[in-house]
Length: 365
Image (cartoon, rainbow, N blue to C red; front, side, top):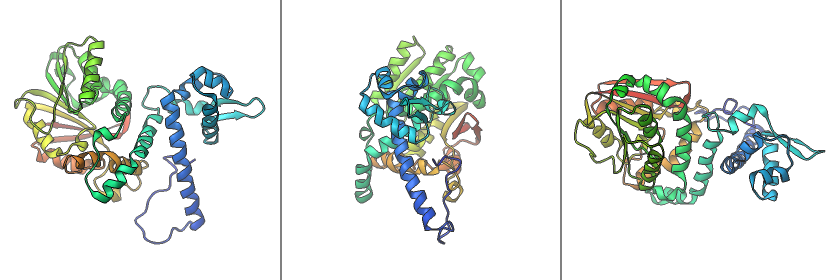
């Protein structure tokens, strides 16, 4: 199976592939097969099959289906695909399956190491492909309503990183731990289901937090989590962050977690962020760690995934709103430039070992 480390890199050379046509055909077949594995892994994650397998000794398809509460015939066929992918071992004489120990961390649990969450994006993008094809022909884009469950997938993925790193690693990188402890005003732009804000509100009870997002469904979920946690310092507001949502100079810290590149008019949002900060305020922006130049992304192991997500979602939802269509791979260089254009004079970009997919921009007024 082709891995991120071993996947052949793209090339800008127009000459024929030196490996020959057989090698090219072999790679194309491998891509198709890996795509199928991706779909199977996504199903396994959504149904919790990997987690169930991890807690059992070698089992038959009947035993696994019983343990997971699923239909045995479907489980058996799924196991065939997962076994041929090399994720589980199969013992023919006993007809039993066991999760490979070296795969467990990457297929199970809630940590950022579990990569099956990412594979759910591919399944969702396949679902909307006919609408994306139509947009290629007619222009425009898709609305957020065209992506059922997208907020849930995104929230699950970001929560894994934030649960591990937000309070103890990311906030110290931004240099605002002491201020949060003393009590400041904080807003999160494009907060989604609000898990990041709720984590911060729980960790820093002296500070006051506002989560801003135009998805009423996401805001409802954010409020529900805050209520379940007994938080009194977290408020969530359904609004369009492209319009000023507060008086100038309302906040000491503004955050944006993987949300700016989706905006219809990101430059306007960044300008609003700058205006909303008090003198000496901080903007922590987490966004995709890639280059603005295609040639610099050709060796990035997950570049094709980023361009796929952009084509099928991030660029499209912006265009659907008559927006700029910035796209997922706007890149660090463009992000820095736009932050300066928004009025930030001090911009520092950090990379974290815990999250190689994102860059962490700390900008100050």
